[in-house]
Every structure is written in C-alpha cells, then in structure tokens.
Image 1 (tube, rainbow, N blue to C red):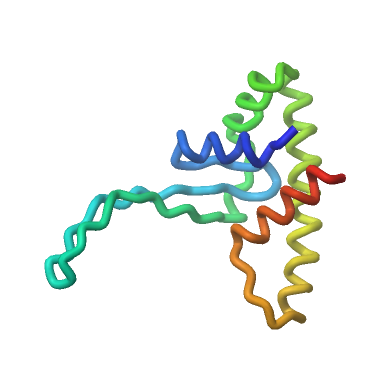
Image 2: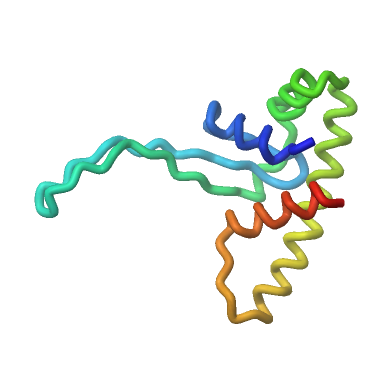
Length: 121
C-alpha cells in the first residue's frame, strides 16, 4: 500500500494535505507570467512546500485513506501514525547523514527515499 501515492493524489486536488503528527504539504498557485524582456511566457504553476508545524489531524487524509482502502477511519489513523513514525525516523537519519555528507539532497529526493524504505519494510 503506497500511502505516499495517496498523499500525492490529494496534493493535486487540495491546497493543503496534513499528515497527522508529521506536517503538511501546502501548494501555492502561481499565475501565468509574461516576461517581455526575455520574450518568455511562463505557464501557471504550483509551488509545493512542507511545513512541519501544521501537523494536527484535519481528517482529510484519514477519510481519503478510509474510503480508498476500504478500512475504518480509526484504522486509517493508525496507519498514518505508523507512516509518520517511519518518516520521522528516516528524516532524523537523513538529517544526520546530510550533515556528515558532501552530497546535497533535495526534499523530494529524501521523501522518495523514505517512501521506498517504507515499501520495502
């Protein structure tokens, strides 16, 4: 079961998706731009940021998982708790590793690695 894929789907549909106990993904819409000096037209886009301080349960993700996976809301919350614990553990490992490494990792690369570890565990 790929919780990260479900989170990704919700991020495409909502401006904020909170992983209870971990943090929230927030999208910021950017309108199309015309740069007359460089003769460029930039399409509309969305910027994705992660805020660890927004970590309360708003019910969106748990309800979504409950419906998609055909499980109870309570089971979905337990599943999210396990997912958040895995992510938190791996982020702590990554934080230590990136401080002692000369390699620069993007947040997306870190989250992809965490997702792969969860799927393999």
